[in-house]
Length: 266
Image (cartoon, rainbow, N blue to C red):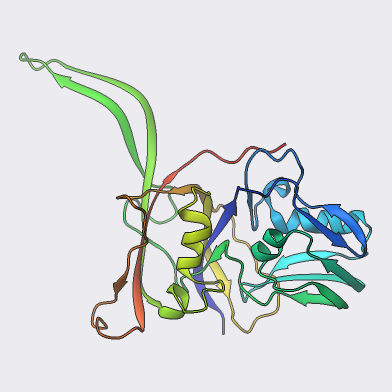
């Protein structure tokens, strides 16, 4: 059954430039060697979208009918018209897409795990710094003074936008499990937030854990955001939901962030 939820789609920076794979026996560079910044699991701009970069590389081999999609069940599917193989010569690439082994013998493969660059709370977002659908609350770097006669003077340098997203009663399976394989907040925190990687919030995504159709990306995602830690050392908050303090069933997630510049492209 489909649910309406927010999706956080993160990026990864360190080690992505020059990532390779062997596609149908052809050694291929998936992310350009001169990639100056990170890549997201999915982005509207192909040069910043890992699934689009992989699809473009497959079509260049050529592998007829190649498609790389994120499905409604949160997992990545790689398919083509005919049987094809992929050997993951870069294990980081394999991990970021949610796969755990090389691909052979089929014309369609669905990842075993949810990508660590995707987190779904299973419900819409509740922003606490601004109305729904807006980036956040402006914070002005302003020096403000008032003289004895009431004269006021202000000097501003720049403006930031900050936001806090809140999700109460998140399933423990979406927050943290012993396996930590993907789809969990702590995995997203590890790969994206604590490493100063950027992310977008996609609103009103129709998610279906039994769905096998490509997800429909909604318009105007919010971001890019970066994590806004409140303390050091950095650690995710852990709070059991109200009324369930003695059992591991539901957790409250609060994410403090701010709007950041986008990754550059080659």
